[in-house]
Image 1 (cartoon, rainbow, N blue to C red):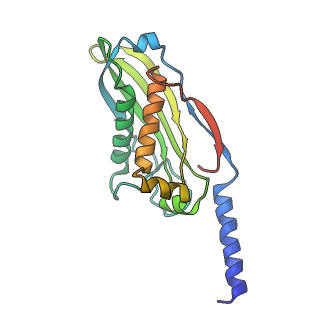
Image 2: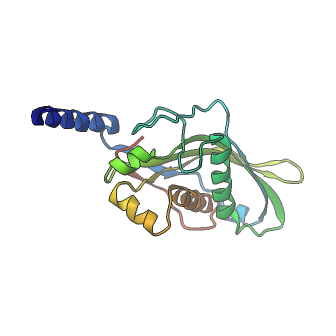
Length: 206
């Protein structure tokens, strides 16, 4: 292949990548905080996570698959179950300091879990978002009384990519550890057990 053709193809590839990533969009961590005095009376009895099978999963090896669930760090398998385990771990960690007398169940439905593909993680620099969205409610574990009705929670965070993610992996960090930690911080903030982590950011991603 001639040098001029290789340069042209490289330019086209860069253009397509730019088009896929698109302009920086607005993302956020957002929730309606539970009154701390109310949450102080609760004790965590269980966490129940649902990942509806109606959510679309993509295994496409592209930069930004069009899907509800994009997850690659676990081996090929049931992505719904894998996502449920990650979210459950994060919610349990975030709610572990509920030490009141009233046992409660936190029920969570995942509506979006869009992490980076390996292609995006390796190719991007200073771009990429882990887009996590949930609907959560709290019920009395003994009576089933709804204490907090179904409420949307957004736990979106910038996803390290390129050199930043390579450095993170050398330190033992992974997409899973980062997402789990952010879900935990988000849930702790929602329940008034930790710092309020609500905020937004602009970044190229999906």
